[in-house]
Amino acid sequence: MNKNRIEVIQGDITKSEVDAIVNAANTSLLGGGGVDGAIHMAAGSALLAECRTLNGCPTGEAKITRGYRLPAKHVIHTPGPRWRDGEHGEPELLASCYRNCLRVAAENHCATVDFPSISTGVYHFPLEQAAEIAIRTIAETLEHYSSIRRVRMVCFDARTQKAYEKALEAL
Ligand code: ADP
Image (cartoon, protein in one colour):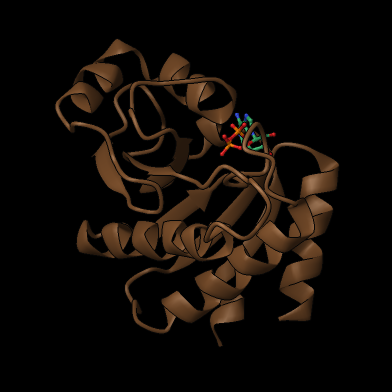
């Protein structure tokens, strides 16, 4: 059962010792605030130099780089949707982020993948809905990728952790 391969923890994703962490990036891939800023700060300027070669990334898609000074081997960058009113494809785009990140992870032989709560920070996606979409999409996508051993949602605060735990229990 895929549920056994999904975990929810509270923590700082820049400390994750995994094959790949996911960055809730913006479409420029040139850094920003929140988790994006924290990842670039911890990885060092070589990460930004590699990101400059990628020519950005559309919302919902994903591109991989090395992890540089991070304990994670790779960073998978995905721009989440900015919440407007829910009528502009936001749920589908958020699901695409999780799906494409896991595809890119599998293609690059990453067996352990850590995600932050994509879009629920400055992009204001409603937390409970985001958690439900994230957990459901991860569980569905893992059906296709037996090489991915463990996926964790790394939640920065207790409220976020509770929302993802609830979504996982409801699965
Ligand atoms: P977005 O623009 O996709 O909303 P944010 O970075 O603003 O991205 O927020 C996404 C989530 O990442 C929020 O829950 C925020 O609290 C969280 N976050 C911020 N820093 C870290 C970190 N170092 N590790 C894990 N999560 C983080």
